[in-house]
Length: 409
Image 1 (tube, rainbow, N blue to C red):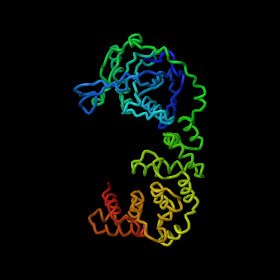
Image 2 (cartoon, rainbow, N blue to C red):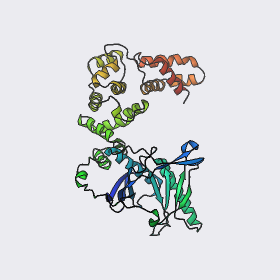
Image 3 (spheres, rainbow, N blue to C red):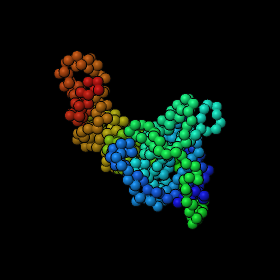
């Protein structure tokens, strides 16, 4: 069953960012209409992949469930643009909260239609559809493969057959599935009882969309790539906005959110900053302490007494505490600096590596001697690291990092 005759929407645009190339593709949307899911195939053997499967079973558990089909016009050039368009559609679905857009689970499916025309020709070439694409990488690979295959056929004066092909991931190639039918052969069944929907009021209540958020962030002085990364999810964009609202300069907030915060999230295997205890106001406070030199009170006194870390280093040590436990930046900085004079051990790998690299940079002669075979100098380096850190560097982790850097790996 299909809503083909009365689509929900038509004549739309999906703004596809290509930040590495400094441009955006305006992908025209011809229509978006509802259909009924017909089920899916489950391939046995070969880890569920089509290639090498011993049999395929039809799963009708989803049969009859509604799905929204979005049909675009031929505005994309190459696999990179096609994959970026699919990623932007997924981003939009998640941003609006109307689905998880998980391709591996079938929440979002992508079929591509590829045609090649000779240089200077006005008409598009024969259209070939490729199915079975379950990742953005496969979307890009399938489009580029078809481009090469069809171009090769045209160069050999061979006609390109209008057909539907399947993507064989194991072989990184498309294989013929069936001859492409005409529209009449699809046997669409029009649903006569679907009423028209007036979406004017709903459209007026839409939140800021990803492309609008990217444009706004660039107006704050951020680079296109930074804007794209920050607006990759609605949660990320909201966190950044709240951090700036709390007084953080946009450039510094972006640098920390995309740098140190993102690295700690990846290390802890967290999907987004919303999954940590870090609050936007706390990050803004931390940046203000660093930029304004207001690391003070017990933290400043302890650091001065130990001749220890710079403000930036102290902030980098305080950040993991804020992300694990939350609280204020002042309290985290005091703990990172040693609090009441106690020795808060430095175990963060990035902070330790910075300390070790500093020691090695100041000890070029000793480094050359160690690499020439004078291994007793290891104690010299470790002692210098402990002195530089005010005795707070984790000895075991420091030694591991030291030996890795001395070995050149």
